[in-house]
Length: 403
RNA sequence: GGGCGAAUACCAAAGCGGCCAACUGGGUCAGACUGUAAAUCUGAUGGCUAUGCCUUCGCAGGUUCGAAUCCUGCUUCGCCCA
Image (cartoon, rainbow, N blue to C red):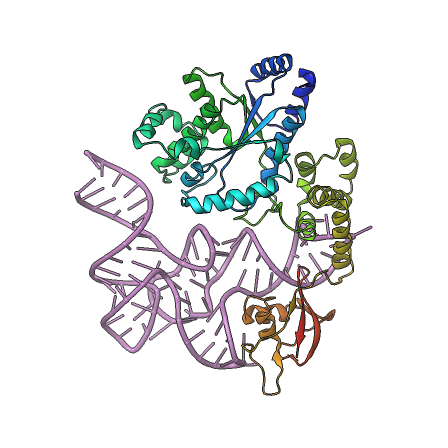
């Protein structure tokens, strides 16, 4: 195995990161690794606690890919045990635990999605259920004895909750210990996580030290704000772009990126060179198009990205109709008038373009609904047999086939 | 173990006997504007067979012509003292 020179590797590793705990140590290990032709072991833990991954997850994954490209071994640690505990990080209240079945199902979908960023065949996969699920309660007590409550409370998130009078469950104290113990089991050289993981990563160092192992180097990546521009990207806040979403959905969502975030997205989510995007930033719209195309292309290929761009222009610049309109044909349950027609609000609600007929009325009266390109504001409009293209705002559309 | 307090729509938070489908902010949705689904501004934001009707303020009862508002019990959560 031939590794690049240490300084060269360091430059790649340090790009875009926030913290690097143990930098001197990393240099030494890279040197030894290069001399002996042995790759470093890079750990990344994923708790399969939700079914899909989004761009926020890809930030550390891209750093892992950097390590892969340098020739090191990436270990993806599936938190099959820890997912059931629930990482308290960044939460102001405890979250419900998952069942083993949930975790297994989530792991499978995650696995199929991280391949979009990582060379999935080159990774080593482990599960922390291997060592945790068979342990006894006394083992757990033993692990808990390794850290003090005061040290746990050093963690920012616990401090805030404690001072703020918010609840902290006892099991939440166990989470950092579990994650740290994973590092002991894996004897890893480096662990990567988001900045919010720093405390947990450091616990890993401590536990490895207690076990007379070399202490892992900790690398943290910035957290990615979501499309709302303020909060961390997450599915529950619905400010995310999913890895598995279609090209046109990804493209549309990325065009919604606040202008201030475009540069950060370039840095953390694309391979576009700084020289290229910094020129673009002067023209926010062009920059955003370039960003969206680069990201969509990385998941769906350049052709799909170009097609998404074309569709976007047609729908948003020219007020046109999107590709792949979902079709709707009313079934027998849809109410009709005496003459066999369907009332406008009823149809909107039944076809799924509006959540309820009341919402449909509001949309109609707010000039938000177009039939075959024409705004229709008459709530009493009725639809007889025919083929209609219905658009609600810019993002919802469908074709009605009424007989 | 003892004491105190809180539960209101997606979230936060007003309302404390009729003027309440419920103030306000956030979010969301729609509109205007802009080569952006950015920013800014405007409007909407329980449901329905729709100018009327029905169901909402933790749950179950009760008082009253009338309750989100008062009473009783229950549930959940938080705080304080031990």
